Each structure stands twice: as C-alpha cells, then as structure tokens.
Image 1 (tube, rainbow, N blue to C red):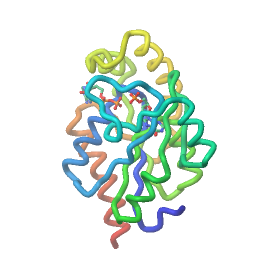
Image 2: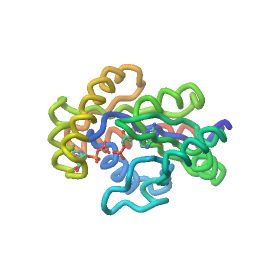
Image 3: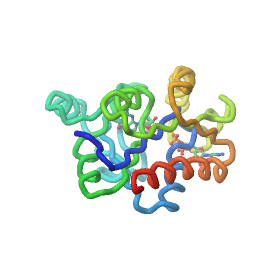
Length: 192
Ligand code: ADP
Ligand code: 5GP
C-alpha cells in the first residue's frame, strides 16, 4: 500500500505526555482528520469501548492477525501488544481522509520504513517529572503500571531526535497550535 496523496500523521511520544489530549484538540480544529483504531491485548479501562478506543483482542487472536499479515506495524509495550491494522488505515485513505495514528516509538519506527511519506511528530514533556504527575493525575493506571510506563518513557525520550517534528507539550493550547500548524502545512501541500 502506498499513501499516495493521502496524508498519514503519526503522533508518538511517551505515555502521559498528552498525545490523546492533543489529538482530541486537533480533531476539533480539523474535523476531517480520522483516527485509526488500534488493536491491543490490554484490558479495557473503565469507559473504554471495543471498536471505539481500541479493538480489544486476546493474545491468540492478536498473534493470528500478525501471522495473517494484517498489521501495518505492531509492538510489545509494557506487557501488552499494540498494533495498527492495515484495514483501519486503508479504508480511510481510500475514502480520501487524512489519518492519525497515535502509537508508541517502536511502531513509529516501523511506519517510517513502510510508509516514509507519513508525517511523524514526537510529543515531548517539558520535563520528565511531568509524565509522572500527568499519569497519576489521569488516574487510569495502578502505581506499578505507572512505574513501568515511566521506565519505558526514559528510553522513548532518547528517540526524540529521530523525529523531524517535535512539539513540547508544556501548555496544552500552545502545543495544540504547534501541532495544528504542522498538520495544516502538510494538508495544504498535498492539496496544492
Ligand atoms: P497520552 O495520550 O500521551 O498517554 P494523555 O493525553 O492521556 O496522554 O494525557 C495524560 C494526562 O495529562 C491527562 O490527564 C491530561 O489531561 C493531562 N495533560 C495533557 N496535556 C497536559 C498539559 N499540557 N499540561 C498539564 N496536563 C496535561
Ligand atoms: P495505552 O495503554 O495508554 O492506551 O497505550 C500505551 C501506548 O501504546 C501509548 O504510547 C500508545 O500511543 C501506544 N499505542 C496505541 N496504539 C498503538 C498501536 O497501534 N501501535 C503501537 N505501536 N503503539 C500503540
């Protein structure tokens, strides 16, 4: 698959940095953007629904889909598996919609190889400790899970220079402005 003139945006960065919050703002500002709904073996959090937040799969089903070549990328992250289904991205590209992938760094590296035209943006925290306070404040993860995510985050932050676009999520509005500028820049190029 090639993305042709369609725009694929990869938003990556450590857990708790604010990827989901920024993408929600971005989609309010640019409603034509569509999310690819990822698959995961993680258990749903309270309030999450299957097919909306994720496709929640058991490990055997995830493996079956890996073997069938259904993933554009996938990775192990903090004890679970996460992946982007080709069908999620292809359907939206075919319908002419720009697509957003919200994925961790290993997956972003795979997309860099398989879909080099995708625009990759690394979201960074103003300082490391902001990740802990944001994950604690979000209240979705137990303390052991937060520690595990912070350990992964240290490694992920080392990857920031691999990414052509970097946005520091200090103030949410300012960061949303910076992300919007990157996305609008690419959208207007592809239309022109
Ligand atoms: P991610 O999707 O990267 O894991 P979230 O978007 O879920 O991160 O944000 C984690 C927590 O941090 C949420 O509770 C969110 O409201 C909060 N948050 C996001 N951006 C900021 C910011 N710029 N300043 C303070 N808190 C933020
Ligand atoms: P969470 O458990 O907080 O929903 O997600 C954990 C991490 O997995 C986040 O960094 C999130 O961006 C990432 N993630 C979500 N979906 C995918 C995916 O399809 N592929 C990859 N590689 N990472 C994903």
